[in-house]
Length: 159
Image 1 (cartoon, helix red, strand yellow):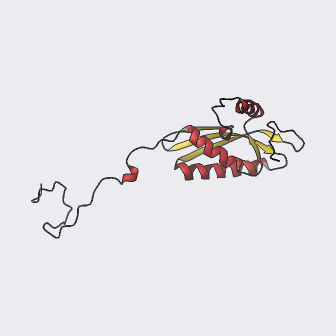
Image 2: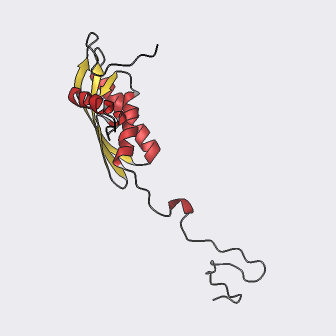
Image 3: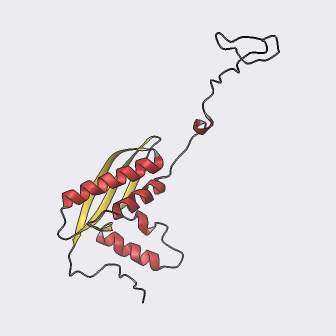
């Protein structure tokens, strides 16, 4: 213990008396104390929104999952799984995440270009918002939306 009764260790070369410099704390910054966990559903929502932003992505999920989702969305009491996360599955660890996406593309677009753009957009959004490293984004193209096909989920138009 120092002469003044202060229990803080003195830094090497620190002077005693009135001209003492305050000791430098070895404690971590307040922003890194503790743990942050991110639920799979959070990453799924971010990835789902990012994938839908890509031109050429018509919908997310298979035709069957979209049909069941449309029915679930109409049932009072709700679906439990939001339309935003349809077609997205995330596995989230402490510092990394892996994603599986199922998409429907518009007819006439380059599927490889759309898949690349989806990967880039999803990786950018998830890493920017969560600080998790995205180790892989697997994309399954389950259908192609033809121009003359009817919609599985009719859009409600505002008049």
